Image 1 (spheres, rainbow, N blue to C red):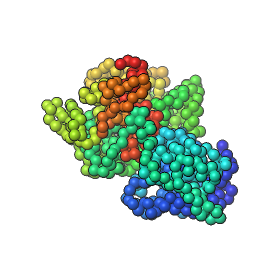
Image 2: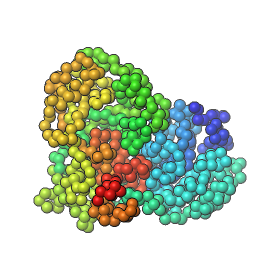
Image 3: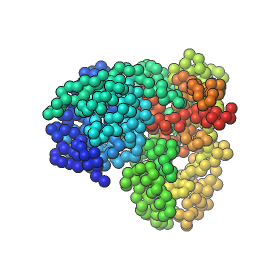
Image 4: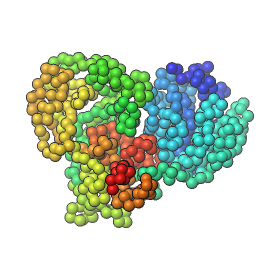
Length: 638
């Protein structure tokens, strides 16, 4: 269905709402007058501090692009966070044609169109590092966004369709929830002077002003409010990480796998140089450093925390790869899609899952793939999935380590932390009791080693052995970079090597390669590639790694609970959660580190800095390290 209709050059109409997107006189001038001047942004931006704008109604992105242009021309050193909601996103097939009408925005439009996609519902975060600009786009209901997305705003752009045509965006609930995202002072502006808008704004606590409108429009509305933020307080069902002081921070990270290095990267983007400690002698000795892997979303029959997390994670990783490939100076992965081998019944089930998750048309395509394996040609039937691709974990870790080190980030190798103590900050000790480091903030990214600390020993975590086989692509198989998924195994390769993986052995703690497991991996392909000989597996090199999983297979993200205090203060489903100050966890990514690590690291850093995170609150709470304790308390297990 076509979302928009052009009524003339620069005039865009919504058949659904029977309203135009902007003024017939001049859309760009209107945006600049009503929203940038209406919120006194040029004067306020000169204060040289990070600034956050929240917009209701992204539309064709004209407010965003106009704001970006003004921000870029001002050459501000601080960071601009731009948050917007859109329940009915304009398809990519329409948006390019719309933006062609605005040559003044051509440079920025071309950059934006490289990111533009037909998105799934949820949070989508974009980075424009050269301009110190972050865009957080919420696809879905605006009120849900205000309830589910932690952030603090300085200005609100109220730009939905007319209140008479689109009353949901101007409701009392909207204004009440806007106020919850204010910390100190915030303003709003809008073209509307509807009596319902005035009443709802005033009842929420805004002081309103009616001023001259744009062009022929007689008047417009502005508002301001002085209010202490209460969003974080009202949402502490499970405490959200936050920093009291965001300047001159001292953050130490234990672990240099995908989780730790992603955290170091996103902290550095906020001007914080983390300090790393690792028991290894260098990069590449942990489970994060397989030579090659793939990332894809796992869809369930109905949307779950896990399926939504995997969708948003894959989407986020895909965007970050284009940034990293440029910043690191080498390709560490690419969003090329993947091929999933399925029969007709399985394809129908997957199509139903895609529909249940409200994914855009074109997310998957029924097709065939020709492969040559061990010299034999096969035709595989299944689907091509648009989102996903390949990733080089070891190469990423190696080059990200060099990148961070060149920026002044310190790494201490052969530093096994055996004890952490909460005393005047956090003190970290080795096995002999020698002090390794004292730090203000501590983040644990050390996989299953979490349970080795007294403070975290009761957090549920499992150590899972996995083995991959490594094939010579030129001799055995080359998948042309597009990963191939089977029922219980996968193949992903480049012109040099192909990875066949992976086993899952929670009871096997043997670090040595087991060639029988190579045979097992090959035997899993027998139903699809009938002429292969699984015994060939003994001829392939392999790699063993141990990954960390939780009981519910979801990662750990957030504050570390004081387990005894949780039990002590819990009464009748009501208690004040008790957590350690300035101690956080990002761990237990299982086999999904490529899809999970970037989005979880960005989410944790965003929460610490009270910026809009890359995940909604219900997912963040579902990943909280205290969740298992809380479940047991509710079941009366203690």
